[in-house]
Image 1 (tube, rainbow, N blue to C red):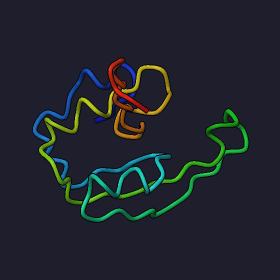
Image 2: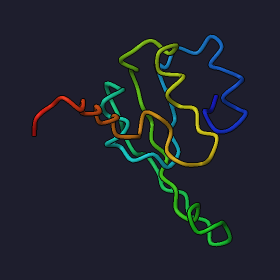
Image 3: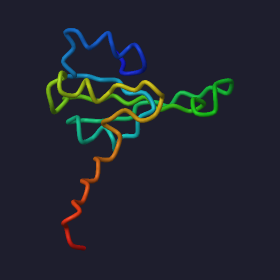
Length: 99
């Protein structure tokens, strides 16, 4: 399963998130979501696009929330960061609030 472009539409099916393999996602973004996060390898490719020449493979175990709650956060249509990697939105200040 993958959140990348149309693969996201396939959904996790009967997957539970007990074990997830993450490709090129830094551990600091995965740790809040999983009990255990372990980078196991780095794949190097001299002939790949520059942003894909060196990619980490990370094994994540024990998703802390139900897969149905996490799944919408993995969608990535543009190759930018999926939602679970983005900083939370900053609340807008009301016009009445004093500095």
